[in-house]
Length: 216
Image (tube, rainbow, N blue to C red; front, side, top):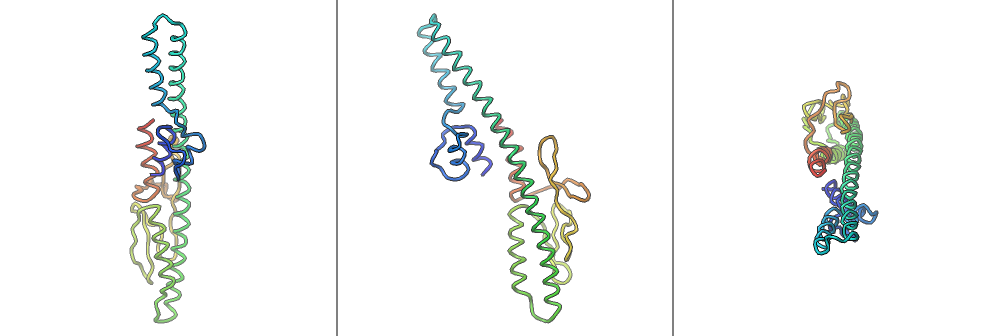
């Protein structure tokens, strides 16, 4: 949703400068100003209409050429902005990958702490388990994963069939890498591309490679 809001702002069509969020920010910065492709198209066709009434007028002809040039410039500007948006989305993917790796390490540490605490007696480490549950929910914002209960009350984590956390160890991490100017995700150790589903990483990649690319 955020990516598409930025794309709409980059088109410069029907932007409310008082809007909140990404759309309003882009509009206030000037990237979402009202004079977009639609406005330039209307101006060009209106000028053709004016020229049809005075077809021999050099002034009217010159204005048509000016409006046509402005429209071409609008297309170029919009494409440039959408290209820059795709680059920004690459950065979002890389940032989310860092967040995932940090959460994976925290989960491995919590598995260890829970195992140690519960090995000391019969009591369940409820506070640590609650913290781990919150961390799992945080991880779910970024990527869809499989969680399987392991030994000593550990929660083992895998993404796309690749094991990332086993017991108290983060056995693998995600890595952002470039493929023809697009940031994708793979397993850091093996280099195997991951089938990322769900979460903000998948949403960002999908918006970048489908909606925004189709718009360009």
